[in-house]
Image 1 (tube, rainbow, N blue to C red):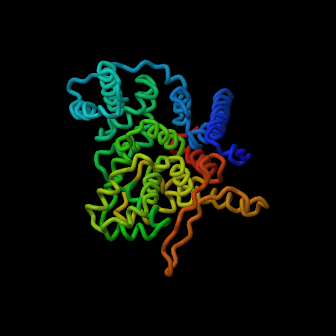
Image 2 (tube, rainbow, N blue to C red):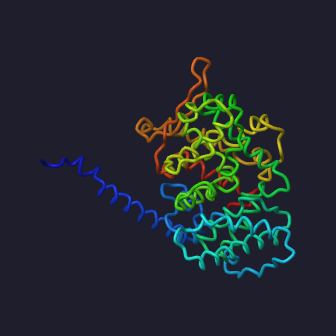
Image 3 (cartoon, rainbow, N blue to C red):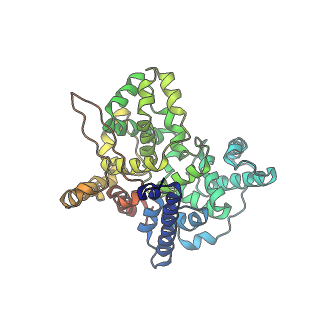
Length: 397
């Protein structure tokens, strides 16, 4: 029996060839963005967000510093020796690092792993020593070890220090007030998309503690496949510092049926949600998180987040920035108007649209936007938003 052309075009072999073509094109685009003067940061961000992320650790070593706006001259500095004796954080850091065996590749020789663990301790203590205003928290080592395994000790020290004084700054306060405030964005995001799930979680009184380890480790502590961890780091480094809470929300929304089928009991729901499935459709969820961010930016959710608990002053200064920078929702509305006015809008790839709940039917379903986020309006808005927030945060050039 002859094979039709449509059958041949959809074969696994053709799928692999298509992906390899896309991969080569992406590598060429990244190389081009790095070679121009000045470096094309916007393109690098789109590449980090789009399907597959930055592809290899070699590329990450080149691109991650630009995503964090690290001056090139800092990348070649040799890290100073760390004084461990009489260091107030050393004992806790040592305990956490000793418990981090599963974060290292399986089959790695003990001698190599133990050497990396010593480097991990030094990176953490070095960053804390340079920045006495920062306070170590359990879970911080899960983020640092990811950078160590990808870029090595010297570069990891520089990247982690910048990350700690910006994206992670709220987690490194003396108290957890700001961390709890960031967690308070979770329920408003879920409510905007699926009020039924939010109502169920409220009735179960499950709270948001189940997502704490997700947030403060950038999911490094809860995902077993290192490839998925670094893919998320590509995404988070290219976006606004609050993007991890949006990703946490889309995980809950993705598990809608499991949640609603669960017994409405705090312990049962907490146990369900705290166990993240390892086979999540990561590219789809990244697309959804980016789409939700531009539809419901932090400035729009601030009042609802504050209603969950008394508001703490965020290091990100979200509310001050909202009044001085172009708001992400403005970007989204402008792009929606452009899309609606286009004669090709009826054939464009679908973007997730969220309707307001009605009294008759308080249920909303997500329409998944295309996997290649960089080609969608939402991804462009995410990148533009990251750049627009740059001046005050000093995160983005």
